[in-house]
Length: 367
Image (cartoon, rainbow, N blue to C red):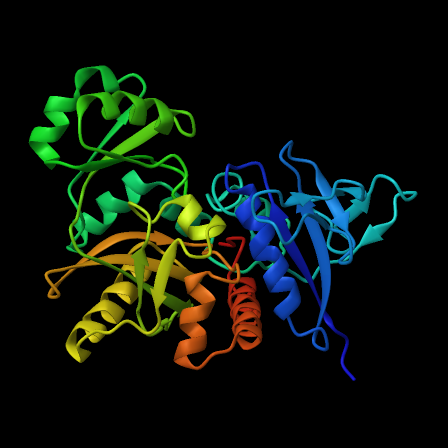
């Protein structure tokens, strides 16, 4: 029997999406094929410290999304780039060391989905699931993402971006004239609907701007699109494939953080979405084009709007989509014919395939 592949599940992190990551990790750990993979749990707390966790006690209040926490009563470890083996060094067990063959980052938001952890793993020469440094960074910054999509001719909502120094040159009336009412205010570098507000008047505007700047130094104002909310999962490297589309029908004012992760009745998920065949084809083609334009690999979820049941508009792309029990990415693949456990296996194999190809590239130049 061949030796199991050691998969480091990296979760938690310093971002405002820490709790979402814990929920996602719990589901990936439960679904991964234990006969094929040896799971090594690496939890990052909100202070940025790394913990080597035991699968039986790595979470506290794991069944309550409002109270879920990383159990920090576990071995603290250091990740040591440059070592070819045994890259995890324990700080509490006499410098014991652990080896990882591949890392599955389930880190949502900054410090995990924005290219930072991907750069660290790249330097350490460890294969990792999902987009590389460039695709991750581009996919995290909604401003840069939307400019690239716009330049590639992909339909998007009208948007404006500002940082703290430039916000003084605009006001509610200026934004309203350009975007209409209502419009959204959101941090440029965050996901899971954290810090997002829907604005209909000047009083809401000031509160929304302040809220968005709590999470990022750059914020977006974005046109409100009246239409159906559609999501499509993408899987692959050089030849990506798209899942059947699904529809999100929010039961809140919009698809907020609470609707996504706290309230199980916060949204109705129609999987697959009830759409005409030509619209399904257009959504899948647009999802794959978006994936390629943004230099993605491995996986991504593309969020779109369908206006008047005929016009497809790309909202954004998520390079590390949620893997919670109600998350669309794995559920869409299950509806397409790839069950959860097989999906995880495919993602790991895609990672190893990419790593083998990259190892064949020349790293020095001889005249």
